[in-house]
Length: 82
Image (cartoon, rainbow, N blue to C red):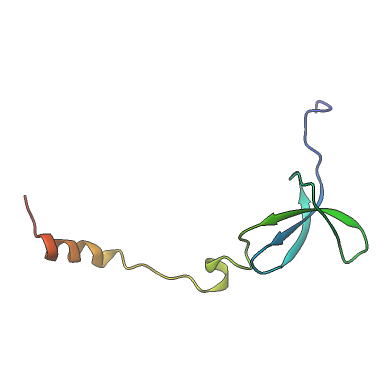
């Protein structure tokens, strides 16, 4: 690998701003904010709007859309105009 062209791969804390859940993981994401973690060390903080703790798919609050009934509703309303 060439030196000086790759971003620094380090421990970073991701914080979901809607649920205040934090996750410590490795990343190359850049951030000017820092946070003191449970182990006493300070890590870069990356704030995200949505994560697995707030995403409807992972929380079970996902709404299913009935797309099969939409075609029939359209045809009833406008008819078959061929």
